[in-house]
Length: 203
Ligand SMILES: O=C(O)c1ccccc1NCC(=O)[C@H](O)[C@H](O)COP(=O)(O)O
Image 1 (cartoon, helix red, strand yellow):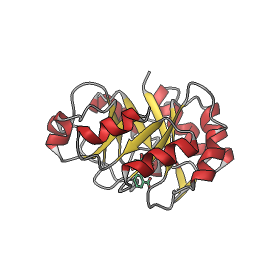
Image 2 (cartoon, protein in one colour):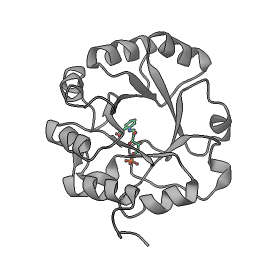
Image 3 (cartoon, helix red, strand yellow):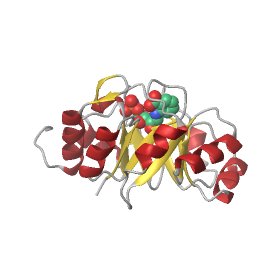
């Protein structure tokens, strides 16, 4: 079963629907973004996430001690960091008891071969959260092993993207939104269905 993460959730109803749809992970963005949530908001939303579903804090350009403090305060135990610099960064986060998702933008070949000891790799489009696709067929842009595909996924392209790339998991934000930062319940359902092959949405 393909791992599904829905990212940039900002309100209770959206979190409840993601849980109902049985996604594997939900993401709360602490980085500069229209999807940004406060620590208090994230903690409230996180309390609605059932056991077994990962709650992931998303970070860019935040000092590691603040990443750790934010994660603790919001009660998330997974952190998705978009600008990890080295294995030392990952060790600091591991020492704080956090599971680390290393997010990289497509195009950086060295990023795909050097995992810094992170627990999971997420390969995103050129700009995180921008809803822009990249060439999932380019083998040189795909890492070995278990990784999460992100960048411009939506209900119409996700099944083909998984087939083409061989990704272990998918992550989506813009493709399940009615407008920037506002998730659309119908698109969320359609996305989950498309990943699981419950719909004939895609040839
Ligand atoms: O979503 C954001 O606005 C964001 C801002 C800054 C750093 C990361 C961000 N999102 C991270 C994600 O995991 C997104 O789901 C991922 O980039 C895919 O986004 P999209 O192309 O919109 O589906």
